[in-house]
Image (tube, rainbow, N blue to C red; front, top):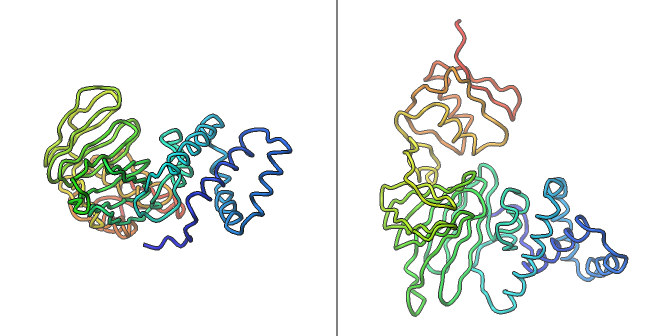
Length: 326
């Protein structure tokens, strides 16, 4: 999938981010400024990378300085690991795998990732080991391959993973998904991982997934049909969503007897702005198939089939409330 942005060398993006942090979140010395100017003028690709990073300057302003500096240190460590021969899988996009330090700040997450999607976008990746990964809306993902392990790092959003046979390796390597709340080992499987505030939701369609909370030595096993919350201190069963956990990979929210508020919250993930649900209609029960690639069409369908009124206060602010008498 073309993103409309030409990819830049990973190392150059690393360097541009490092300079942005040094210049914006500390007091650079004259020597540092001179070194930056020499770097900027050294090659046209340096200027392109600097422009790309600076285009996000407004978003970076919200990043606390201590987090930005942590990103710099992690980026430096990552470059050292690359020099030692860590080979990233062939995912498109800018890559700076700097850990979880700035997980809550979307601009950094995109720059930290090997592959990402914007709001309303989806993307399918086919990895060297035969694994297929589908990225849902507003998702950022990194991947690494070593002789011993296959690893994904989910920085943000939601993925559907169908693990490959790893046929090219001398022996089948363990497959792991790292989240901010713990690690998941896939055991020949198809599963969904979705990050939410303070936890991750794990839904298994095939095979099994071993869950390892970050701060608990006890692991739990998720099996087909199971849904779990994975938190840093433990894992526990999750209630049903009301719609298919992997339906989004087919471009739909499909379910029976869903709360209207839950459906609207799900549709809101695929559009910029907000969908506000009036409490008076939040508990209405709805069923059907709603297309996430055209949320306006889904809202119009609700208008035609439910006793609701859909008001576009602006292009980015939609309110759904009870219909008014004629």
